[in-house]
Structures are given as C-alpha cells and as structure tokens.
Amino acid sequence: MCSTVVEIIISAFAIIGGLLSIVGSIGLLRLPDVYLRIHAVSKNATLGVIMIMVATFLFFLLLEGEFIGKILLTILFVFLTAPVAGLMISRAAYRIGTPLFDKTSQDDLKKVYEKKAKRT
Image 1 (spheres, rainbow, N blue to C red):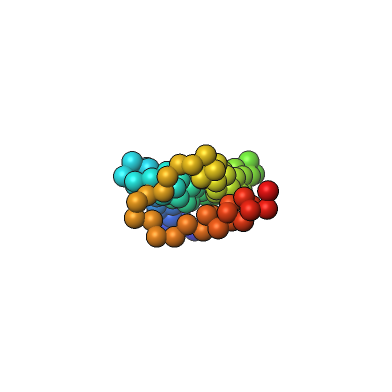
Image 2: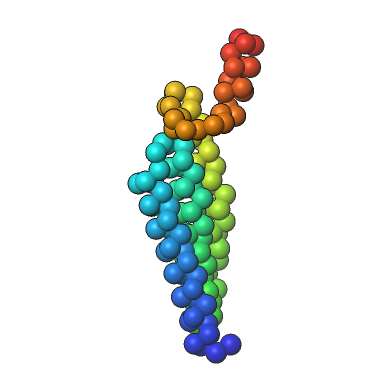
C-alpha cells in the first residue's frame, strides 16, 4: 500500500478514537446521574481507547514493520474489562442507594432486588 494511504487510515483511527474519548468526557461532565455517566464513559471511552490502540498497532505494523503483540493484548484487555468494570460500578452504586435521575422511566434492577428481599 502507498504510505500516504496508510497514514490517512492510521490518522482516521486516531482521530475517531480521540473524538469518541472526548464525547465520553463530555458525557461524564454533562449527564445528570451516575448511571448515565458510567454508560457514557464505559462505552465511548472504551471504543475510543481501542481505536487509538488500533491506530498505534497499524502504525508500527505497516510503517515501522514491527509486529507488537502487546498492543493486541491491550486491545483485548480493554475490550473485556472496561465494560465489565462499568457494570460493576453501576451495580455497586445501585446497591448503596444512589438515586436515579428524576426522569428515568424504567428501573429493571428494582424487581430483581425486591425478589431477593422477599426470599430472605
């Protein structure tokens, strides 16, 4: 492939990743409750970091001629752990009684915890 095309592809991955990370950061600042904030950060920032790591991997592979498997492992690690961490943090916040946003229309966990309370 032509070096310029490769550089454009790598730049596109890096820019998209940066923009997704910025959107996640804006969501962290602007959204009203902890659950919406965690959703914004765990989805957008995770995809943003993965896109930046893909750009890094492609840079070293296609322009420098080096295969760096650690970058692929980093992509896999972030892909697997960040959404799970967001889920666990939101569940912990729910369990300690952090209130939902006033305009939230659906609370799926309420039924689950009511059933657990009835069993004990």
